[in-house]
Image (cartoon, rainbow, N blue to C red; front, top):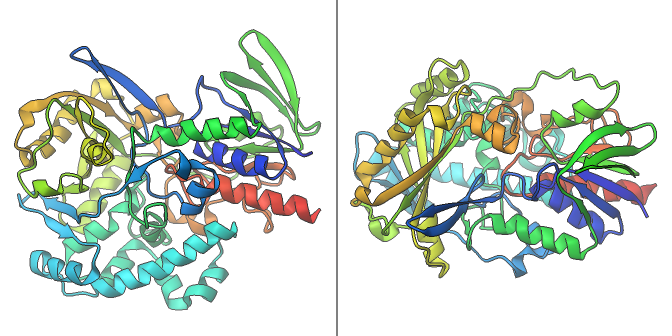
Length: 501
């Protein structure tokens, strides 16, 4: 029986362990912290003598493939929900929203009336769906991404626009309105300040809608998203996966295929046939002898979030019947100002350059799943924060974020507490390199077929030139989020290679 050691018990480590254990591998999982989950964990606060749990790191679920949700056993234990209502978009000069309908015909009309859009909205959605289907087939088959495969599936023109091209050219190709371009292109800076002019950044746009657990949309988990990793941990334990929590790696001897760890006052050594790092991409280099990092990684993250607690249900001034819809508030109104804000954060010219705020209606979604909590919760996912200060020193920035949202709410006086996380907090709390939620920024030179450390054509997830060491953290294809796709694809390629040998 092949012995596999996985370092890191976040979503990718847990998913990889699940598939490997089911395929007859002897799996051990090492985790530095006292609990599994990585950034998909809960925190608890007390308000008015009432304890309330909330998502500490990751908040929403969207990029997970439906087959992972089902095949791991999560679908039997976890209830989910995504809003069927349109998303609502605001710009600073408007109090009423533009509705992003799921129906393409209604969307095209709405954008024409509200934003003067005269471009090819329907063509954009149709072409995007072709690219998404291509990405999803890569996921399911555990196939390494390549430009040649994209050309075979999509043709040269769509590959040029959507895979190798830059976001600016893609958006200009389909749309006439700056506001449409902003909304459709905002995910380019999801993880960090990738430039819209950088070749390869167009791919981030379909990538963010490539999950199938909610038919390409983003949604919520009953009680909280941490139930994903909590339940998957229990499933894996039942499969015989061995967990070493609160364990620190002392040495990796890749010549003897052993790893030395310490747990409490005890030191011991584990042997392996294969070693998988499901961590940030920097961690393996600290333990591998003779390692040479010849790739200059873009690591800066610029995302933060405020979790806001209300003593009564939030009442929206606009479209309160859509209380469970995602809302977006833009502080910029052109692609140039969008680019300038994100690049200024990269240059660390100030603490905060307002770009957009995405509002997750966590409390309303929980009520839709018959989970009625003592406090309503809104999460403000925010761009663009510089990587230089933690939340404790940025009260003014937190207040600015909150004050951007409050004018849209009828009962702002019901806000009783808020929790702020900056990129520096994300680094210190979850060990994200330089606070990047996807571990490395989705720039063109770190996207699609370049999102790998492998020098092997037959295994996209091998770590540099090592024969039996692999990497499937959020820094590998496709990227982060609570999806587990890199963990699944890595395990599938490993299983195939073992069967061939």
